[in-house]
Amino acid sequence: MDPGSEWRLHRHWFDHSAIGDLLGEDFTIAHSHTLYRCLDKVLVHKRALFSYLQERWIALFGVRFDVLLDDLTSTYVESEPPGHGKRRFGDSRDTRFDCVPVVIALIVTPDGFPLAYEVLAGKTRDKTTLTDFLAKIKAQSGHADRVWIMARGIPTEESLAPMRASTPPVHDLVGTPKGRLTKLEKAFLATPWAQVREPVDVKLLEPDGEVSILARRLGRMHKERAMRRRRLKRLCQRLQELQRQEPLRDELLMKLGAAKKEAGRADHLLSLTLPEADQAVNAETFTFALNRKKRRQVRRRKGRYLLRANLCDEDPATLWTYYIQLTEVEQAFKALKGDLAIRPIFHQREDRIEAHSVVAFLADGLQVTLTQRLRVLAPGLTPHAALEKFTAIQMVDVHLPTTNGRTLILSRDTEPENDHQLLLQPLHLQLPEQPPPRITSEQLSPSA
Image (cartoon, rainbow, N blue to C red; front, side):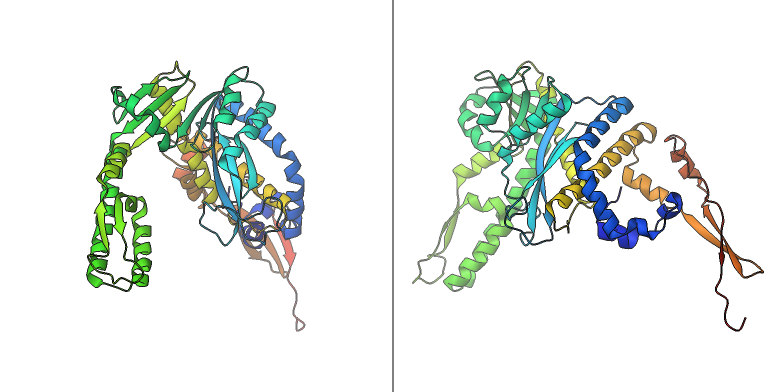
């Protein structure tokens, strides 16, 4: 559940846990070279491991794999790039441009069960991953009438066409860049809003055998508009300060760049006039004005999402529910990077980088399994909170000196408290048996 790095497991975790007593092994089992050799052997079993997990989840929870969520993230490697393979510099989603990124493509169910993943080169573009994943899931899980839910940027027209033409057909629901909304804006204006749930309204169009859904979340819309107003107001105040300060032109450009970075996309709503190279900076040479046309356009699109799908017979509320389930992928990425410590990766070999990811994803599968069991048996309790509670149960060694110079060592568990019993019993967990006593002889001093 807490893989961290092999260095941490070797230097800290094994020595501060009872795993040696439970396994009846000494510290050599956690030697770093032993752990690396295990990594070398685990990678070839990756597909079999995930196939086994899929069968177990079906048996335990009745999990269905007819709706799949696809998204990408990245992590980074603390090693020198070899110039080939997957460790190559590219766009870092972790803003660690000093490290070599690798891309992780993940497929999960709406309940968060990881079905498959791939570690890809850091320069991999989102849109190039879909075709390979379709073939991978088809080979692992067979043919099925599946629905693929994907974030914008992953599918392209070239990859969607063969999906929809296959037998059985592959259904899709994908996020669409807001630039596509410009082409459909006039058609949407003539279509009334329909409420699918309390805070969500939708408009539907069905051009060319697919359905386009414009969704509006009122709460999100008001929040995004308020955020944009605050940033725009701060930017205007900063520009007015620069007009009064009348700095040198080069200094103005530096301060202007910092102000734009802080304002984010709000700076696109202003039209700036900058002084020429030989002009002084003042209120006449440095001016700004609000682009009202662009502001109206941005205002209309805040809190709105354009989706497209070939599920023309589905209810709009169902389609929206499908799409917001992409948050399960984001939660999986958050768990991998936070609780399960998949980053940073310190391995120097590419196969061990991938094997490290296998261990992290197996831990993620264990965490999701615990989440599902807690959801039924202890609603409201997260895996993190449950593990925190269980840290109070420890194994201690009691040293009892004897009259003949020996020491009797008794390894004993601390007694579970009432709140622990409330978790142990519903989860059908039992504490391990107490290890047998051990007797050691103390080194006698020369005077004895």
